[in-house]
Length: 388
Ligand code: PMP
Image (tube, rainbow, N blue to C red; front, side, top):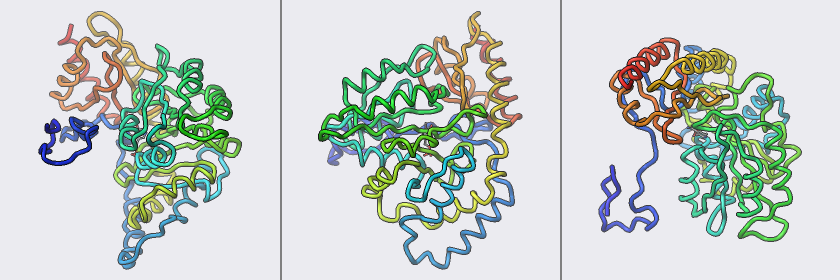
């Protein structure tokens, strides 16, 4: 047996449960308009580039030494950022960084999942979650969202009681749907988890509630972040990233805010020196330019609203396109595409890379520059006309 798209001979003792699996990831293609992986389309400002170069140059003479394992200076910067961005007053011991929020999530599964343990998510949701579960021998289970992709709180509460998960993984805004999680819904789930029991764990042990806030900076102004609830909820962990709004995907920096107890659990499973000195220096440099890095977020939010309104005026085979309400930098649209892979391919032929992800009949597009969005609209109009 070989894995499709890989060259794995049957003579290798690949784990039985990995046989036939493929490496995760959207196609990385060299096309003019890339709107497929929810990045920020705006490159760092030259002043930021200069500070990154300067900070990296300053630490380069010490690269024979291991970096600060506890990345204290960077954790101070995470805490300062969360205070400024969400009004949360957190100490250094309540934040923790890693190589992207992907690694944060893997550490959460390594610490709280494992054989006999269950992680519960609310689908449709981010397609990496089942992979973290697989890689840590955790069982992945889902409670389905409502038709409009909002969380079905009753169903989620029933699943918590029924499957007794160790990890309840909520995503706000959700990917690929863009749906925000209202604070009242989160508080009901937190309250239920505070008395719920965990399969495979002792008495008095309660689930960890993880809120993945990868896209939270794109939320509508005035709505709160789950980081404001951390002091009141020792089993709450809120995962964040510099990859999206902060326009720093290539640097691979994610972080989590939680009680000191949760952070101490993650410190047990982390690799020694998991965050390189170069990464730490680059991230500190970017935080020196927080205003510039976040400078386009409001514009991307407006682009999202304008694009959603435009999509709703388009039709596919005589029916208006549906667009899921989004608090993120992407939109899931269509709803009734009969062959979304054909639409995806026809867009790609026109140099516009989007994503065939989520429930069948839907496609996802992330917000690009004004010029990229003009090309997206032009290409989609042609493709929809052809499909009539
Ligand atoms: N969570 C969600 C919901 C995401 O969509 C992504 C990126 N696609 C991530 C986490 C991981 O992002 P990163 O590792 O770059 O922080």
